[in-house]
Amino acid sequence: MEITIGKRIYPMRATMRGWRKFEKNTGVKVTEVDSNDITLIPELIFYFVQEGCTAQGMQFTMEVDEWLGEIEVTDLPVLVEAMAAVMGSSKKKAKRKNKPL
Image (tube, rainbow, N blue to C red; front, top):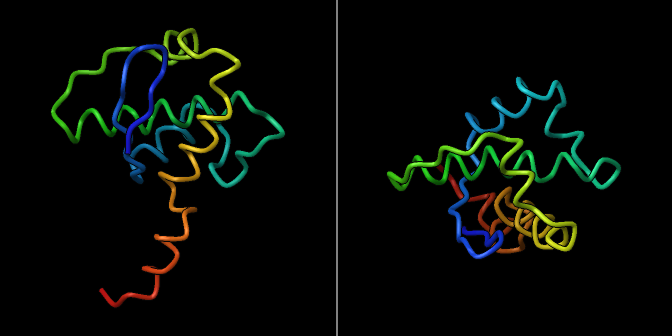
């Protein structure tokens, strides 16, 4: 999964490490992230982008504040959609959930 912010494309990967980093650094449970505090979505995606870059052997040196500075309010619908897709809210993933390990 990828996301475009500004003119750059970033890989995203929803991992438990990214999930844990978000919760540790924000004090907010991922399950509580919703449209009530829209600023949490870009921050959660920051950790998923870190994980995506790590998985692809890419260097990602931005800090959270720098990342948030790259995001414009008009990017929010794209971020919400990307977060839902990377966390498995798509119908394709739902069909696979009953597959044996």
